[in-house]
Image (cartoon, rainbow, N blue to C red; front, side, top):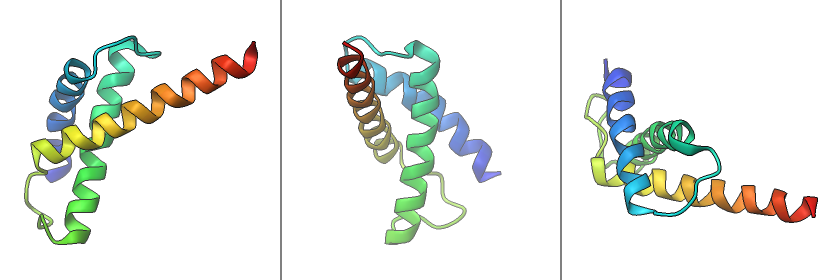
Length: 87
């Protein structure tokens, strides 16, 4: 059940991360949403390992947004490097 909750939080996190990090995203809304879901899972993994969350706790929304923003920034940096390498 906690995986489903993490997925739902991740969808919201992707939207919030997009709003907090304005600018052009290489993948658009779908990639941003998937990065939000991945950010939620990363926040859950790190939070459980550091003792912030238990296995049945919902992942923290703020931590998920932070994870999604880091992933979005990395995605933007990787995409720009590929575009520079092509020219």
